[in-house]
Length: 336
Image 1: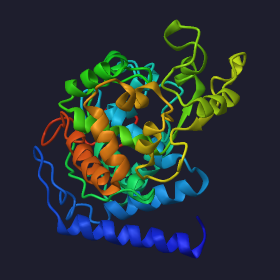
Image 2: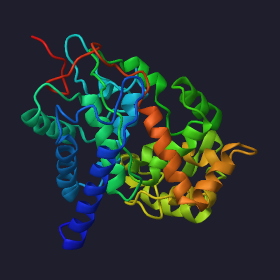
Image 3: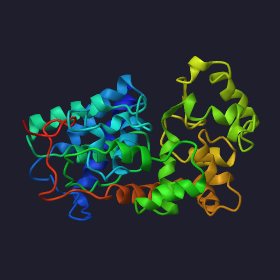
Image 4: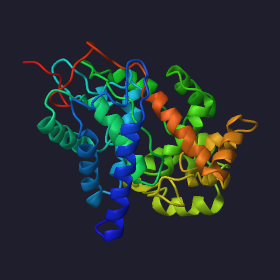
């Protein structure tokens, strides 16, 4: 990432995104893409360069920051509750089953917050930082660019039990996935498009090892798993390797570090890593199959819908105006 070509691409991405932010205005429940244009005009640049610097040594950081935004919005709305640490009055969502030993990038979010506070004290919420970090991570990976509606406030609480209840597990069936998304006001199209975020990132063996050896307690592998891919995954996650459940493998077998539409092509080839991914294509008669085929064949259609769906997701139960607060540190609420 230190080459001149890489830097040139980075600069181009930044310039295009800055132009988008300057030229577009989208309002969603009091959110606006120009919310900080006067109070923190360099916000995008600050967030961008912290993430770009982190990505030099951590190729996974983009996927991790994108996942933080998802896991935040699905639990009591996009309010940065996922960032709160354990205290005498708060049970951190970070210790919920879907998050523990799994979420990453909290240190980078804190670096972004420190840099933003130095330039614009007590102005930018941690919830907005998560939304911006998600957009920048996608565009830096080669994905779509969009102007992020801003103006969220940070929560005063977290909800670990809700995190255990409302975050879709990697073994969810299609009806279960639809239910998880419906609870958030997201429809089937949103489900398929947002699942495409798994075109980048990694997963631990523990999240899919049941598919390799004992799917649904049958004593056999998942029949929807490509047999050649199955053998590859068994080498990474051996059956007798109890200590290997923390091994990592790419969510996208084709282009693991590029935000593109290969995720959907993988599903067509029965090479979706997680059961919750492959369910979108391999559930008989599912209405999601047509969408998977569409996005597999047309990356622009995927990018357009992903943009619409992540903006929609970013508007879930947001706090605005006098609600919540602007945290001074993302890991703790303000106060004595």
